[in-house]
Amino acid sequence: MPLESSSSIPLSFPSPLPSVPDNIINSSLPSMSYVTSREMKCVLHWFASWSGPQHERFLQDLVAKAVPGKLQPLLDGLEQLSLSGANRPPCIFECQLRLWDQWFRGWAEQERNEFVRQLEVTEPDFVAKFYQAVAATAGKD
Image 1 (cartoon, rainbow, N blue to C red):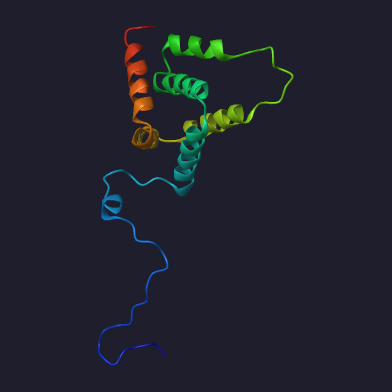
Image 2: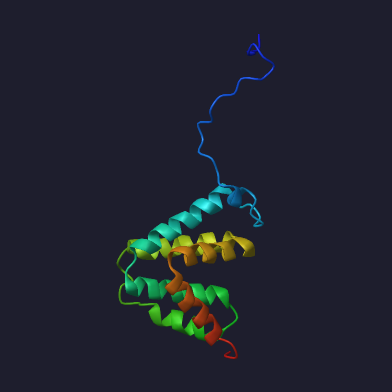
């Protein structure tokens, strides 16, 4: 038997879920999967704990992904490779970069752009450096 109040107004129960702001619900961005949003949150969380040199390494990787046909970002990335520690297990940062690379490859272009937008919210100076580095690759092969 359905529950009804004495008037014609149906009973309502409070939602156990937090409300979502209208600007997020009505966003013009295409919705992304739950998995992709969690991957982005992980990378943003990792980024917050990385050191300055690790930020620089991530910047090089991000630039190389943004302009994949350019030779200079690839050469800069090769400089970071080291054969001296080939017998040691990877550090946590290296594992995080491997996951980042794997996840980034699976993201659509809109999702990649959304990641940079989210990074810009928390790290505007880093993203400004990213845009400068991308612009610096113009005309270089």
